[in-house]
Image (cartoon, rainbow, N blue to C red):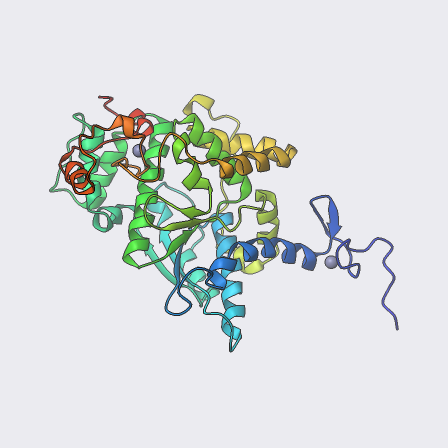
Length: 375
Ligand SMILES: [Zn+2]
Ligand SMILES: [Zn+2]
């Protein structure tokens, strides 16, 4: 018996009942999932086929998981890609995914799903997992000790007899404003993730940011004076830390990532949903990062094309003020315009010598977030 004739079938496969509107087309669930997953699949092509890299041996990529919807969806998609890769007897060597969870309860008090870490390991058996508290950064990245003291200035005394947990906590409390706090936390987290990726000999880092998140990051970075760091923070390619940065969800809107997550019941017990923004919070108590996330999530839903433009434009920028060689900020690692740094020699050896002897140098944006402004 022929199937029931659909009066208005999925605009893609023309076979099933449409359930979702995907970029103004009515499509069925299967076509929705296929479209969304394909965006990330395309972005992983170089790693899957090992384009321009050794075809044998490990190709490890680190995925930082925050239990947020984007990084969890990215893990779900990449795990599926690995399943397919491993099911082929003569397929390409592909990539491995190492997942790092910086225990969110050690960053901010948050209600998290119980047994989250056990559950992700059961759900994604083809990846490997590590969970560490935020203060492990002091062990992973020994330079942070000295930088912390130099950065916080005279008002902060680092008590070396304290535990790493206490030392990090007292440094974080020395930072005064909401914007600076969130800025400093982001830099520390980035250093943490980079240090771990290097320890595990990863080739690069895959970040869960969707298009909307990247747009918010672009706007916030410009507002915070981190315009020159925009490129590596939102573009696929080499970062100043010698690791490749990739954003496989960059062609997706947050709403699409959220809809995808809702279609897989196994993700419900993992994802910690952000608390809905409270209207009562005074705007002046919000950091620029939070403000931009709010702005993009309210305006981005109305005008998705505008947000897409923000990230596309930023991706085309070559940072003009800073080159990708030369002195790097001691705190955030961004390259600094050479005019900010005293150099007296052109020889490579000499430069290296000079950098070693120089006190830590902070870029304009990091200097602005310092508790004790001495610049
Ligand atoms: Zn369909
Ligand atoms: Zn900096």
